[in-house]
Length: 190
Length: 190
Image (cartoon, rainbow over all chains, first blue to last red; front, side, top):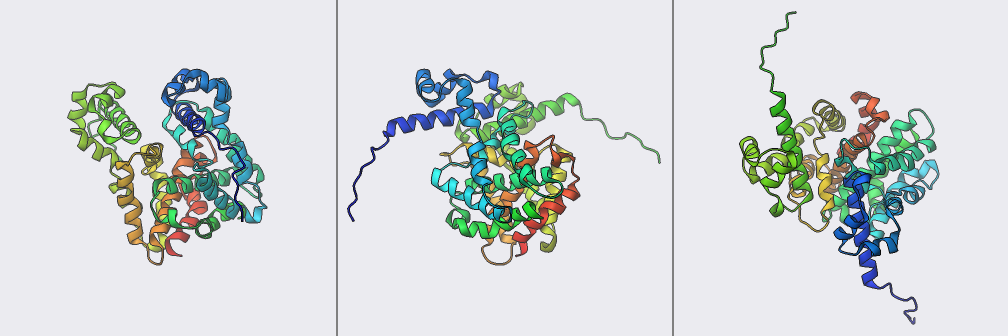
């Protein structure tokens, strides 16, 4: 087999800068009210210029939408027949965490720090994750069951993040699904 | 029945100051490396003097131990026979959240923001919650099951916090346990 490097490598610097901006933006939007967040502050936190932030992500509203959008993650998580949805969600969450080094849902927990603030990130989560899931669930108490399933998924991401060198880190996605998914499935179709 | 108010009422101001200090300390210790946290900074964040912080909670190490201690919560959560532990944990968590307006475990998620830092709060959680629970579980893969159960409990607190005006807020603790506890129990005794 002949291996050829045909694709141009993404310049490492550009990637690092973009990642730093996204991390800084997530921190800012999850920890402070929207009105207090500034592109200048995000740029300073990321160690780049404000113009670079705008170049990569546009103005504040566009950057917020990039950071706060749970839509693509929800679409992927909920894309399975109901009788296999529990397992599909667990596998998708674990694989996305491992492949992309980022949890599809977990960042919403940082909005829990704002007790008093109405949080746009939380609103987005309600609409794109819990609300969407509730609309898919058959049977009674779909809203309550969707909230509890969202909790199970957030909790799975949280515990994998908290035990980075623990038993969960060594387990395959399939094995994690064997243990964790039946509980999720029970709230989907029970 | 004759009701008599015998206990002296806690002065509201003192309570508010203490609560503000505890909140500020939690924020500080979860979001910054231990070495960077100062009593002065916590006091400023809480809007009180540094001497008041020391008066109520002692020096930095004592304050950290107060904030980071999951021991009493774990003792209460795990205090039931194994065949009823799942339901007991869910009921205890929901009741503690509602009675004390504070989740017994959830603050550990804020340490997830420190990707690179070793977190004393996280270490404490491993030792007092996951490790303790693993030591109680019979059967194979106790460490992995304890991590997943910890995830279920964190996730329950997270989703109740994220949906403060949702269906979970209206449900009784017993009803939440009916829906959520069988899944937890499955990881305890399966």
